[in-house]
Length: 303
Image 1 (tube, rainbow, N blue to C red):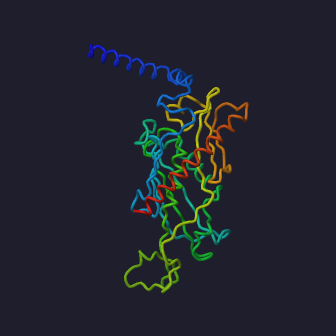
Image 2: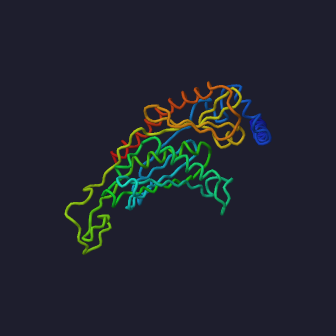
Image 3: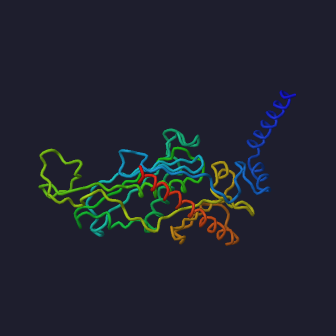
């Protein structure tokens, strides 16, 4: 009898899997009727989220963020540059988002992923417009030297809500950032103290005496939601994104002030109540993400 039951269970699982593959939207809508998702999450709940700071030893700042299976690795490298003439007292930030073929079967070798430049621009716009980083803190010598922060984010697993995970990894990497010590050599040029060549004369007082961190403010956090009929699904998986068109990404800062709202494609929303509900879900998510970030920073300080 046990063998017969096991055979029946296996047959039932195969039938469910076949139905999911053949009619994915109907499969998900059956779950929506019960206000639950196929992964057993309530509609408004995000997936389990983890953060690890210092994931790349050779970087000046780094972090790995996971939201469900979606995994991002962010690394920052600092280089000295000559500041722009119109902003002599400011440094710069350059952000690149990479989607190698390992992250998704939809990304083909030799072909750039369509989503990569879109996410890169969203990240740049969000980080700069939020005011999280005061670019004046990246200045070294007015008009002569400033820091360029190169932030590279690699998507290791693309299972939905890419921007949310990428932004979280970026924020965490900047929280972990240690700005290197630099000094003036005998030619008046800025050099990294750690890179000083033996025999090169350095002034006794470096430009910045110790490695230092950035003072982050108005830290942005985001939540992507799917709007489908009368339902709102927070933190969608890649499967959910592929079968339901209307995506909305809300970005709030650490004070829950609106930074930006993205809605790529999909039908025009007839009611603003759906957006308000998305903002309310994002407020709850901001508290969760702040707590996760603070715990990661505390763990790093203990280590």
